[in-house]
Length: 331
Ligand SMILES: NC(=O)c1ccc[n+]([C@@H]2O[C@H](COP(=O)([O-])OP(=O)(O)OC[C@H]3O[C@@H](n4cnc5c(N)ncnc54)[C@H](OP(=O)(O)O)[C@@H]3O)[C@@H](O)[C@H]2O)c1
Image 1 (cartoon, rainbow, N blue to C red):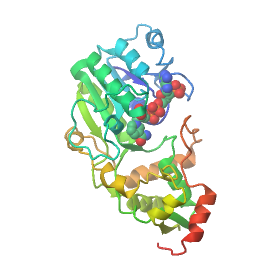
Image 2: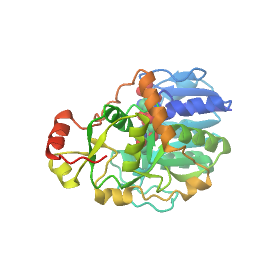
Image 3: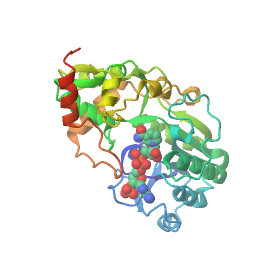
Image 4: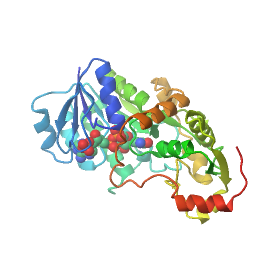
């Protein structure tokens, strides 16, 4: 079938384009052309999706039957897609758990079809919620919204998992959050999510799905242990209490990527994934995701961090300060 990827040149969108090609679709991607080209075999269409004239001009009569939308970040982007693509057989949209007003910290129960943000703020969660509403109204029952949690894997230009792999591979004493090591975390491999999105669009499957790895799949410490194994590192964990991390100015999620304070972590990963399981969204073993991400980081030229993203990782002077103050080591 004719499948349009809105996005398609990096990370999730790139995996969607590859999955769609593997499944025999005629694939076109629509991007501004700023972040490179799609995988070989996909036709690259160019334009800014915030511009109402750009998508119809780029399509130039080519009518997609399926859409996978990975790149919607603004209300205009959603409105413009809704104006052009309402008649497709299946439309799989990548939203976020942030479409829920109470996430983070959650917890999130079974999906309601409506997102819970309903304000006009120009912000990530409210924008995703707006997009879900206008696209659902335009496409109807064949509109699926995947409210994604944490997506990881090769081609991730944000390097949250990537920073940990780099840091752990250098070995030695590594600051870890003392109380954070047992906190649950769940991730979905971008390649598994991508293939599933294509399948959902093929089926014309509709509705809302909390698209994340299952509760209990691992812990923060479990993830770091896998990173240590994959990089064959001699890293020694130096657990630093949360109050010391916060007092030193360590920013959760950014300085220690993927780490959340206890009060938030307690419920943030407690998200009902029964519908995702029913629709067979699977994620491969964590060790495979981490190993493939590390292999990609060795082999490929690393893409630049997207604009407006803070560089992940503990600044070296902050790390030195924390290590100096915490002599005990634990392996
Ligand atoms: N990473 C996570 O853990 C996480 C968690 C929850 C949800 N999500 C969601 O998952 C998706 C991640 O997808 P992703 O990483 O593949 O894509 P993304 O970062 O949202 O989008 C990047 C792609 O869209 C294109 N693009 C950006 N702005 C554009 C515009 N104005 N007009 C046309 N094309 C544009 C880019 O190419 P050009 O720059 O060349 O235009 C690139 O191909 C996002 O929707 C994100 O909100 C991510």
